[in-house]
Amino acid sequence: MMEADQNLFDRAVDQMTLRWPGASEAVAAAAYLDDGSILTGVSLDNFNAAMNLCAETGPICEAYSQGRRIVASICVSREPGRDGFTVLSPCGACQERLAIWGPTVEVGVSDASSSSGWSSRPLLAVNPYYWAAAFAEDDVWPSAAQHGS
Ligand SMILES: [Zn+2]
Image (tube, rainbow, N blue to C red; front, side, top):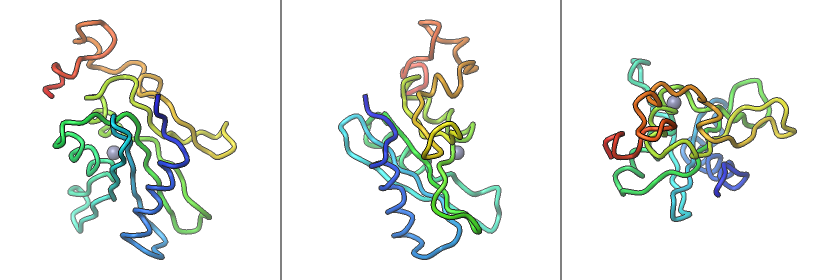
């Protein structure tokens, strides 16, 4: 099983540095696909903040376009006044997007109990009462076909 690990974290940081070298504030994400390859992306920022997109959306759309499954995802933030990088748990919208690939998708989460400040958890642990489970054919999670993929 592939988790959100240090390698994935580093790839997100690499993507952030590539796109915004030296920026004091930035967000980037990286995702493992089912074949072990990695996709990266950055947040899409816009003057109209309602049009902003999470950093995970690039890898999610690309994986979907390729017909591949995301098996792990991480989102990393750099914020003014803070040293280093912070792992951001996936927002509710990104949890919904990643849910296409099932409850075992691993995601990086902010975790104060971990020495690194983050850990990897399956979507089912992050969202144990996923609303769409009410429609699951197996009572746990809607299938990929039910998600429309
Ligand atoms: Zn999000």
